[in-house]
Length: 592
Image (cartoon, helix red, strand yellow):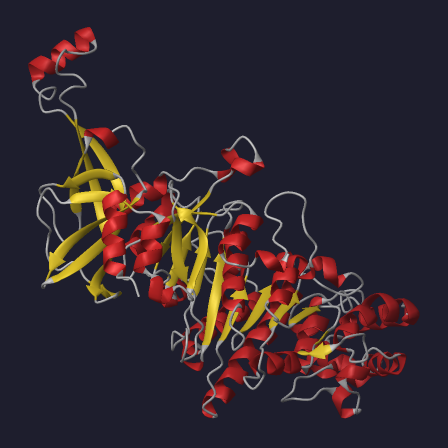
């Protein structure tokens, strides 16, 4: 076997020198004296490395250059500055006496252990004059040879050509396992590329047959890609083909075939619908009493349950007739309308109403959500059971499309969507707790789009949506130890609940968080590193490019997501802007 250390030394020697370690420097930040041959190069964002001895072993440190400064001590003299102001330049001082100084933050250090490399730390400051080299794909491949099966690429080092190596380990133990679940956050304005990045990460985790993925998709974006409905513009990543190549079973469920299975849900949806509105009962206490009498809850059965009407039979005309009969009972009317005048108004509307119209327009669109004999219908519990079945040799990718587009002909709005999401969250948490009691580690990632809508920092006035927020917070706190990790995709950082942000282990920050409260929140998470924040602020809006092909989607990432980030420092990369390059670099191109 060839000596990897010798190969690395040869690769480093042949790579371009851009500077030397200068003074003052520390183990946390190095000052660089930029060589004259590299002064005209674009250096900010470049991945650089240097070799140095420590504890009798050869070590190699890598990091990104975060800032370059120009210094000319002669022109800082007031007299010279006055001349420069008058003449524009002062020969032979201007340009000739310039020095370029760089700042480099070390993110990873490797020590040579025979023919392999082990993670280490920068425990000393190398001598001044130590050469700094530009990293290359060949050097990174050599240093990370032992991890080559785990490496996954999302893009290139920010503003440079080498690919930034990353790893996304499954949550279980054993080969390629992290041994614990992670919570992940992807943040950025609309158009920053966060959804595309999330789909790339989905495929990174989908490589593992023992890992399941559960996607709650309020806008239907993931569902379209998984179905293979490619868009003409943007990033047409065919998730359907790639998942098929990975032998991943895909289960796509929409509101049209998702069976709601709780009387509590029927009660809430009936309350939100126009059914009672058309019977002259506005939202409020009276309508709540009417819903409780008619539908009840799982713990407190209503009259429909007592009449032995089941949820799955609610869509039948006989069930509607029974409900209509109950509402026509004067004793029932007295319970939700105490004044005689109100009862008379209700009775008048009730008697004049067209029962066929009420059944077709108000009752059926609600009760269809609970109907079991629909095509490809599946209950929430059954769907979660399939996801959490760790006995499957290849576990599925489950996508639940909750978009309005898929709810045509059903009663559907943001509040009903929130109620269904809460049912999913409660089901996930309850099932995860059961698995934990049985000593089953779930090894599952839940992806939640539009997280800022579901779990804002401030309390939500809408009671149903507030319940979703509380359920989500509870899930994030408790499910990680069960092997259930969450990926939150959000347009905003400052308005997402602090509890969720505090539980995240891996962060991705795209364009659009560099102003106001967003930047303040970002600064808190990055630790106030001024150079890292300056580099983030240099991100440009992807949509400011001249055409789609030249768009650059830049991200800053924090957390254990790369073998080059175990020092905890931020890393910067530009995501692939073509599906072909992404698939080719990760050996997935054969899937298309």
